[in-house]
Amino acid sequence: MKNRILKSALLGACTVVAASASYGLIPHKGLEDTKSLEQDKLISSRLDRYTNYNHAKPKIERLDITEELEHTVKSGENLSSIFSDLNLSREDLHKIIHANSTGKQFAAVEPGQDVVATLNASGELERLTYAKNPFETLIATRHDDGFDVELLSKKVDYQVASAKATIHSSLFEDGTRAGLPEKIILKLADIFAWDIDFALNLREGDEFTVVYEKLFVEGREFDTGDILSVEFVNQGKTYTAVRFEDNQGNTGYYTPDGNGLRKAFLQTPMDFAKISSHFNLHRKHPILNTIRAHKGVDYSAAIGTPVKTTGDGKIAFRGVRNGYGNVVEIEHGQKYSTLYAHLSGFKSDQKVGSSVKQGDVIGYVGKTGLATGPHLHYEFRIAGQHVNPVTVKLPHSMPMDKALLAKFKTQTQPLVAQLRQAKGDAQVAQN
View 1 (cartoon, helix red, strand yellow):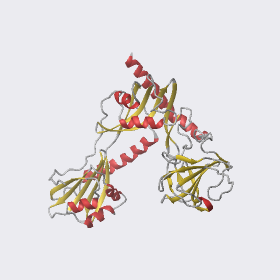
View 2 (cartoon, rainbow, N blue to C red):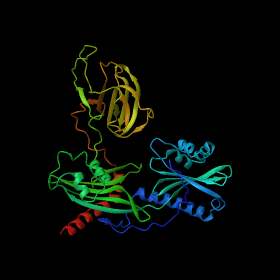
View 3 (tube, helix red, strand yellow):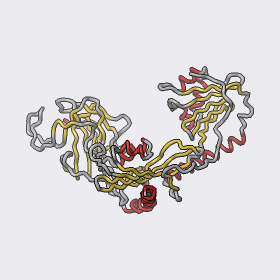
View 4 (cartoon, one colour):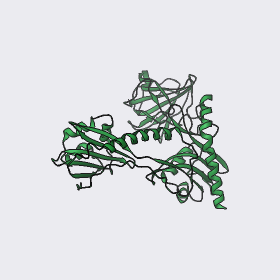
C-alpha cells in the first residue's frame, strides 16, 4: 500500500462534449430507449445536487487539510481492512456505512479502484472519496458528529456506432478486425446462440452488421453499452435481432416481428448434462422392482451440481414429495410446468411464489427419496400431461400480447432503420 500526499480536490461537475466521430458512428436522431431516459434523469438530479453542493462548499473551505492518503484496492480487501491499514477510526467507518442508503455502497469497493482519505490538521478523517467508475464517485464528508454521503455523477454520453464484417476465419477474429470490442462480439454470439452454431456452422462469406452503443465521459470513450440491432447472414439465411425492454423492465432480443430469439425453455437443466435414464412409460423401477412409468429424464451428476430452471416462471412447490425426495416444481404460465427431483438442497433465497428466470439456479443435485445414486430427475408437462423433455417440440418463445406488440413496433422500428443505414453506409464505403 502506498500512501502519498495529494492535492485536495473533489470530482468536478462538467458538461460532456461529444467525442469526434469514430468508424461507424451514427447520430442518435432522437432515439432514446427507456433505459437511457431513466439514467439521464437520474444523472441530472445527481448533478443538480452536486452543483449546489459544490457552489456552497461549506465544509471544504473550513478544512485545515494536512494530507490525503490514497489507497488502491487490492483483491480480497474491504473497507474495514483499508481503514486498518490507513490507521483510520473504525467508529468513523461505521458512521459512513450507516449514514444513509448511499453510504452502504462504500462496503462494495472493487479491486483496482482508488480510495482517498482526506485528513485534517488533527489527523481526523474529514472526507472519504471512492471512484466507483469513470463517471460515479462516492464522497463522505464529516458533518458535526457524523458524515454526509453523496454519489456524484458525471454525465454519460451515448453514441451509436456500427460495424460490418465478412467471415473469413472466425467470428472473433473477423469481428476484432472490423473494430468491434470483445464484449460486443460475445453479446452478438449470445443473441443468436439458439439459431447459429458459431463453432461449427460458420462459412466463408457469412457476414454481419451490428449497431451498438459507445459510452463517453468528458469526451473520452470508456466502455460499450448494449447492442441495439444486429443482422447475421449464415449460409444464405438472414437472422435479424432488435433490443427491446418490456413493461417490467426485462430486456431481450427479438425479430422485427416481435418473436423472441431465445427459446422459452432450455433443452437441459444442467451444464454438460449426461442422460442416465430416458423417458419410458413401461420402465421397471430399479428399487421397487416393479413396472412403473418413468415420466421424466434422469441426468447423472455429482452431488452439489447446480440445477437450473429451464424457463421463466414461478415456484409452485418446494419441499419433500414421496419418492421424489427434495423437489422444486415451477409453473411457466398456464400451460407448461417443470419438476426437478432428488435434490440435495435448495437455493437459499427462493420460496414458493418466487419468480425465476431461465437459467437461474434453483437447487443442487442429490440422491434424496428413492434414488440409487446422485442424479437429477427432470419432468416436463404440457397442460398437466407428462411429455418426453428430450423430444418435445418446445415453443420458440412465449407470445407477446397485442398491447406490448404495439409498443414493441414503435420502439424498434427506428432500430431497424439504423441497421439498414449502417448496411448502406458500409456498402458505400466498400464501393
